[in-house]
Length: 519
Image 1 (tube, rainbow, N blue to C red):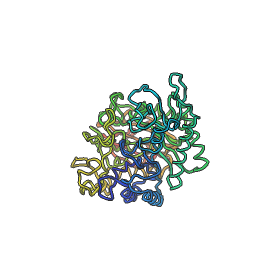
Image 2: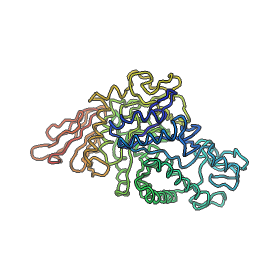
Image 3: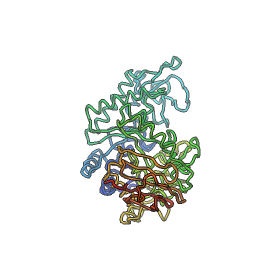
Image 4: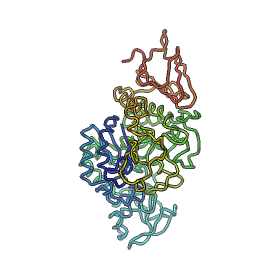
C-alpha cells in the first residue's frame, strides 16, 4: 500500500513554511492508522531546488530545509516500528549543475561522466554552453541546470563522434555511482527507490533494450547484496521494464492512454498534445474502460507474476482525482476500483481526503513545465481547521505554496471520525484489501461489464461494482445468479442495491460484495 509524499508540502515542524522530516515523523501514526505500509518520498537531498529537488547537488546528504541525515534515520526507524517502509526518490538521469561531479567535468575535457560536444545539436535548446574551462556544450535533460549523466548511447553515429558506447569508462563510472548511492541509503534502512526517468538513461535507445540491460545489471546486484529491497520506477511501460529486472513500474500519465483513460478529465495539469478524449471516472460518463484493460492485460500477460504494475491516484506532476468538475464527492468509486484491482495502489498524499487540484497558482521551483501547471497538485496537506490547515505555524505568505483557499476544503480532522467520509471509506477499503488476498495484486480478475457500471469479480470470491458518473446505471447479473437469485453479501457498499438479478448503482456509487458460497 504505497503512499507518495511531497515532503515540502506535508508537515512543517519548525514554522518556516516548508514541510520537513520531523514534521512527517509526527504524522506517522496517521499513516499507520490509514493502513499505509510503504511511503515514497519525493527527492529530499541537497539541491538549489530549481526543479523542486529533481536537481540533486549531493545524493548522500539530506537538504537542510528538510532536516539532517540523523533526522532521516530517526524517521526510518520510527516508520519501521509502525510497519511502514520508506522509499527514496533516485534522480538517476541527471544531477544539478552544482554537483561536484559536474563542476569537475566542466573543467576537465577527459572527464566523461556527462555528455559533451564541441557543437550544438538537435534539440538545440538542450545543449548548454560549458560554464567551466572545458570548451563546448553539455546536454541537459530538462532545465539547463540539469546536465545529463552519461550512460552511453545504444547506437553510434559517425556524424556525432562524441557519442560513447554503454561500456565506455564514463558510463561504467556512473553505473558504479548508482550502486554506491543506493548502498549508502540501503545501509541506513531505506527499503527501495522510486527511480526518476528510469527509461531514459541510455540515449538513442529506441527499443529501450540497452536501458533494460542496465537495470537488469542493477537488479542482479540488488538481489545479491540487498535481496529485500525493491525498485519502483518511472518508466510507464511495465511489459518492458519488469522483465528487464524492475520490481514495479507505473502506468503513467505521459505514456500512452492507460492511466489517462481512467483519470484525466483535461481540466488540471494537462498537456495539449494529450488531446481531450473522455476518461472513465468522470461525472459526464462518456469514457470507457477498454483502453486501460487492453494495456493492463498486455502488460500482465508479459510480466506473468515476475513483478507488478503500480496504479497511482495522481502524483506531483499530474492532476489530483478531485479536479475541475470532478469533485471530492465523486471520487469514492475511483478508490473502490484502485483498491480492489490487481495492481499495486499508490495514493498521492491528500487524495484520501479529496484534496483538489488548485488552479491559478504561481510557478514554484520549476513547477510550470511547458503547458502543465504542476503546482496545482503540490499544495500543503490539509490536516485540520486551524491556521494554514494545520500544515505550518508560519505566516501564510511564507508557505511553500498557498493552502487551498476554498472555505469548504477537506481536512483529516473533519473526516477521521465520520464513517461516511471519503477518508473513512478509503481506510475501510485498504483494510478490506489487506484482509482478503483475493482483492490484492496477485488474485485473478474476471471483467463482466466495461461500461457503466464497471463490474468484475476477484478470485471467484468477491464482486466489485463502480459507477463514477452522475447518472444511475444498472447491470444484469443473471450470469452470477443461482436458481433463487443473486447470493451476494455486501462488504463495503455505497449506493449499490440488488433487485432480483439486477445490480442497480446510484450516481457516484460502488459496492464490494462477497459472492454466495465464498468464504
